Every structure is written in structure tokens, then in C-alpha cells.
Amino acid sequence: MNEETLTALVDTHESGIYRYLVYLGAGHAAAEDVLQDTFLAAYQNRSPENDPAKVGAWLRGIARNIFRKHCRKRKMSPILFDDAALAAAESYWRETAETGFDQIMLALDSCLKKLPDKQRELIIMRYDKSISRRSMAELTGMTPDGIKSALRRIREGLADCIRREREAEK
Amino acid sequence: MKSEWPDRFVNMLLQEKLGGDRPGGCKEKILLRARAAQMRRRIVRIASGLAVAAAVALGVFVWRFAPEKISGGRPDSEKVAAAYPPARIKGQCSVEGELDRGARIVADKGEATLSLGGYAEVDFAPESVCLIEGAKNNEQVYLERGGVHCRVIPAAAGMNRSFSVRTECGTAQALGTEFSVLLDETEDANMKKMLVKVVAGVVLVTGIYGESKSLLAGEQDAVKKTVAVTEAKKEPEKSREQLVREAYQLQIRMLRLRLEDIEEDIMENEELVKKSDNASTVYIAYREALEADPEYIELNKQIEEINNDRQKQMDAMRKATPEERKELMAAMHGEGMREAGKKQAELNNALRKLPLEKPELKKLKDAAEEAVLAVNALYEKLLDADKQYRQLEKDMESLQEESILGGRAFGKRGNRMNNMPPIQFGNGGNHRKMIFMDGNGAQGGVVIQEGKDGAEAKVDVQTF
Figure 1 (cartoon, each protein chain N blue to C red):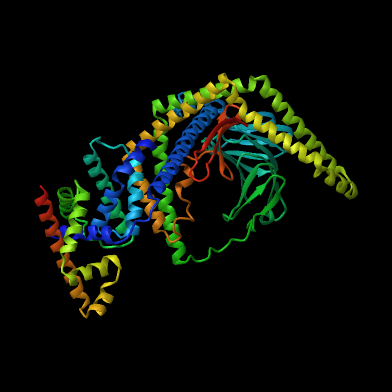
Figure 2 (cartoon, one colour; figure 1 turned 90 degrees about the vertical axis):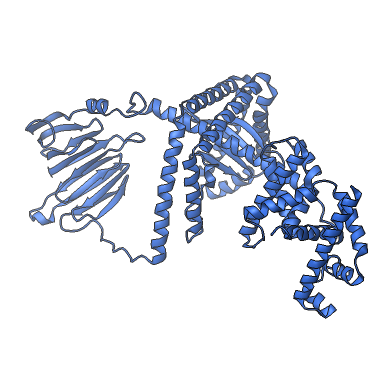
């Protein structure tokens, strides 16, 4: 692979692979590191396909392996390192995120607006202001576990909402 | 487990939507690292290719010029046995029994010389008495009386042979050398001593109690029958840490030997040998063409003149009085010296650029580089094909990591340039030199200038 091909590859797949790594559980710093290593590894090998979707799957495979090594090296315990879990993750990613990411983000916007105020507040505290669960618990008078469950329920609601929005579009 | 993925997916979406912008410059970092990786790969490829060429050329040199050249490349035991020279004696002496092992030689008052194995010659002092002992390639004489002067031809690379003189006081073993042994007798048999004087090389002197010491050229020593050569040193008890370290070292050494065996097998690959021969031939053709170039000759002549002037100044310094030396020093470090240095740098630069400016030479230079790369590509392919090699390498790496010194004390294989056999390697800041060998020794090579900040490495074939 030459530099030109690599540049094109990065332009096309950088955001997707980054998102995929965050989806797998990588923090921002880890995702950046693994992202770089992924494209370097790809650069040293030849892409088996020309179809962008297949190239995307190939890059995700590389990213998965590098992230797995990254976690082992740092003795992190990521959720997913059995093959079945990874297959499920990949399959969900393909079904949901492979096409029309911009539409998904629009759907998310719309779903966020539909959230009750209290739930939206929790989401903003957690994701926009990066407040820890413990601090959120102090601010809201809930327990940290309660915050965890509440956030999970909100995300599940958002996932349903996004799915409905997309189905409605179709 | 599956229900977790939608949650993770939304988590990712929220992070992207609300979690702020990603730090930029990732693409630039990727491209920079890719360039650096490419540069490293290129250096390693060229360096290891050159190593093969150098090793093969060295092998050819040894094969051609070794004194005990054996046809067919491998030792043929029958031929060696047939070729082993019998003992010969000339001069004034008498031989008791057949001139072979066990024979007793009594020298008369004149000169006598005994030749053993074709590699050791023993001159007898008048009235000395010797017995022929030893074995093939381990020739030995037992000096009963008098003295001997011995000349031993050093063994060629890969040959294992020795020569020693034994007396009742001890043994002097030659390690490719010239030395004398004199048995100094006194009335008291226990006070006898063996005098060993080394003319050239190294001699290992061992007393009858097993204590030994090495004598270098110009050194001499006396070994008394009743006194040890040196006081026996009591080995200090080893700590557990030392024992563990030694165990690791032993295992790593064994793995390394096995790896070297595999590398040797690969080096014997017919196609690789053919490609390496080709690389050597192409390189030598380039060098010969370069050396025949009038401009090259002229540039070299000018460099030599500068060197000669410098040598003259150094000679004058050596002969000068302290006062004169001060003046000379001042002159040497003045303008003239700087000019000469500048001129020499310019000449060297011109010498380096010469092959690039002349199409015929450039063609040959490129061909040399290409041939070397072809060797390397094949070598790497062969190494890749050898699963056992890779496994052993992994084992060795993990042993090095496990070792209590973190591997550093035992030396990683990094300097072997990506698994290559050892090569002649000079370090000079950010450039490295690979030396090519031919029948006359080191004649030229390749300089690899590492680029800064991910820039391309410059590779240059040169004649030194």
C-alpha cells in the first residue's frame, strides 16, 4: 500500500473506526492510539478488497485485535474479548451503523429533544459536562448505582427511539 | 450479552454528540508514522541484504584462501585422513623405534628439527630427549631432557587443533605461536623446573596440579615441579541470583546457537547462494569500474596528498622539542589546517557524488543495490517460511524478558539487524556503514544515513 492509498483510506474510514473503538469501550485516548496503530498495520498489509464496506470490515478486524492487545497490555478488562461477544458487536454495528450515520445522528437529535427534562439533564451532566456518577449522585440526591441504572434506561430508550425514527424514515 | 450492544452504541453516539470535539491531527500522525515505518523497513531490508552479501563474500574469501582448502566445501574425513602429514625429522639425532607416536628422539650436539602434523616444528637443543605423543591435530611431545623451540602455524578458521610440550613439571600448550621450553634440571629431582618463553602468540602453561596461566609474546615463566604456576583460586560461592542469571544465560545461549544453525541452513540455500554470489559480483564490478575512473583516481590522489602532509606534520611533532612542538601545534590548528580539513571534506563529497554523476557508474551502483535487495527479499522469505525459527525467536525473547536483568545484560538480537547473522558494522552518529568483503578484505560498502523526523533514509554504495 502506498501513501496515497493510505491517505484515501484514512479519509474514508477514520471516523468510522474511531466510533467503532469507542463503541467497543475504548476511551478517547485509547481510541486515538489504537486508531493510529490500526491504519499503520493496514498500511503494512494489502487490503484484501476494493469494496469500501469490506475494507471497513477488514479495518474493524484489525482495530479489534489491536484494541484487544492494548487492553491486555494495560491489564484492562474490557467486556468483550470472547469471540461470540465480538461477533455480536460486529453484527450489531453492521446492522445499525454501517450506513447513514448522519441520519442516525439526526435521529438522536430528535430523540434527545423528546426526552423528559430530568432525563435530558442527566444525559447532559454525564456526556456534555463529563460529571462523574458519584458527583451526579450528590447533585441529584440519587445513589451512584441509581445514576448508572437511570443512564442505562435512558440510553435504551434512546436506542428504541432511534430505531423507530429510522424505520419511520424508511 | 446482545442487549448490551444497543446501549454501547447509544453511549458512543452520545459521546460523539455531546462529548466535545476529538483532538485533531490524527491523520497527520498516521501519515508521519507510516513514513517512519517505511523508512525503517527500507533500512532493515537493505542492511540485512548487505549483511548476507558480506557474509557470503567472506565465506567465499575463506573458502578460496584458507590454507587447508578442502574440496566440496565440507570436510571429507577420508581426504583429511589421507592428507595428514606423517612426522618427519631432519638434522643430527637418533630415533628409537619407528618415527611415530611413542618414538623417542635423542638429539646430538648439532641441530635437529622434528615436524609434526604439518603444522608444528620442534627444534631441539643439543642433547635434548623427546617422546612423540599426542594425536592427530593434537600433536604433543614429552620433553625428557634439554630444551625445544617450537613454531606452530595457526589453525585456519573452523579448524580445531593444538600443539603442546609436556614435561614432568607441566605442559605448555600453543595457541598458534612460537615458543621455547627448557627443562632446567637440578640435583634434586623435585626442584626441576620448566622454563617457557613465548616469542609470538599465546601459550597456555599448565602445572602438574592443573593450575594454568596464559603467557603472551615476550613473556616467560618458570614452572617448578613442586610449585603450582599460580595459586589456585577458590571460586566464591555463587548467590541464587547469579545462579538464576547463569541458567538464563545458558538457555539463551543454547537458543541462540540453534537459531544460528537455522540461519546457517538458510544461508546454504542454493538460490540464496546464487543471488548472493550475484550481489557480490555486481558490487565488485561496480567497485572496479569506480576505481578505474580517472576522476576517482585523481580525487583519491588529492586526498592521499592531504593525508601525507598530515602524517609529515605528525612525524615532525614526534621528533620536536617541547618548544618546537608548541609552535607546530599552533601551526597545525591554524588556518592551514582548517583549509586542509575543508578541502578534504570537499574531496570526500565529490568522491561520494561521482557515481551519481556518471550514468555508467550510476547504473552499476543501482544494480548493486538492487542485487542486494533481491538477496534480502529471498532471505526474509526463507526466514518467514521457517516456523521453528520464529518460535525459537519468541522463546528467546520471552526468556530475555523473564531474566532478572530484563534481557539487557544478555544482549537483545536487535544488533543482528532483523535476525541476520553478525556483520561488520560501524556506528557513526545517525549513519551506519556496512562493509563489503572481497578476496582482499574490506573494500567498500554502503552508508545508510537515517533521515530526521521521518524523512527518507539515504542509502549510498561507497568505496572506502
